[in-house]
Image (cartoon, rainbow, N blue to C red; front, top):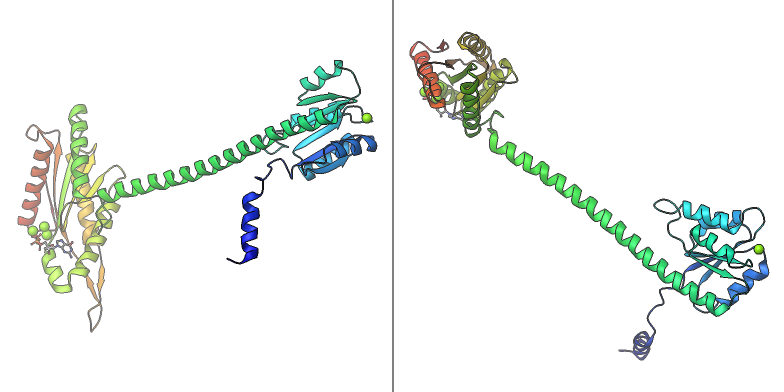
Length: 350
Ligand code: GH3
Ligand code: MG
Ligand code: MG
Ligand code: MG
Ligand code: MG
């Protein structure tokens, strides 16, 4: 290590700890410049910064500009007196205001004014002529409070911003949780609900229907000759058909109806508050909607083709004397779907 660097390190080790009270700004307010000078001289030691004001109005202006850490203020001044300025300062503390600024009032008046000044929020009160050593000690004591107060305010601000960050993180987590929940319920290909969630909803809806004896219908639908479609145009095109069919089905049902993709090319729907007659009508509308889907297939060479598809549907409803559980209702709809396939496809059986 070079000699000079050694010396610097040595000096740093021996230097006294930084004085937290130095560099603090003290505003001295007095209509008599000689008094200001007197106070400045008495407090010259620790390295304070000084600001001066010669009346109450100037003091308030200086307060906004210089943000002093302490105010030593004469009570008797023309126009706006020290007590009045003190009242204004203390009424404007807090967030966005001056904050906490200790005020030491100084007066030639005797002890009677002391109580009034302290009641108004002055933090200390000295009667002239005062002992300079006493003022110096009181200033130190007030500044120690101010330093503590500033640290608390800073800590609070840090806590606030940490809390805000936590709030934001929590909100993000909530959103992610919701998104995850949605993903566990939705079929990735079609955007309809998946089979697992359908089963959950089915048992809920079935229980509700049984309790209130309200009608409930269940529809099962299977695309006709889908294997052939896949084999002819390829699996990716088959996926496109599944998406289009899903949209067509969803578009034909009410908001309260619950549609899911049940398997490869099988769809299932729950129609609450819907009896056999209305359910049959809904199925016919779905069948027509699927049959009207037009997809364009672009072969590697040659002209584009228009591709259509059809679907078969089976529907069952409760209340029914033979369908006593959700499984019975599903089995019955499946039997009807089978009958629709056997009956030539592109039709509905009940
Ligand atoms: P049917 O009229 O009797 O229902 O005849 P089908 O050909 O539709 O019946 P099958 O059950 O034999 O064929 C269903 C086909 O659906 C077979 C399978 O490869 C296809 N498949 C299942 N899941 C998907 C999928 O996610 N995407 C595509 N493109 N095809 C699928
Ligand atoms: Mg005066
Ligand atoms: Mg099938
Ligand atoms: Mg089949
Ligand atoms: Mg099929």
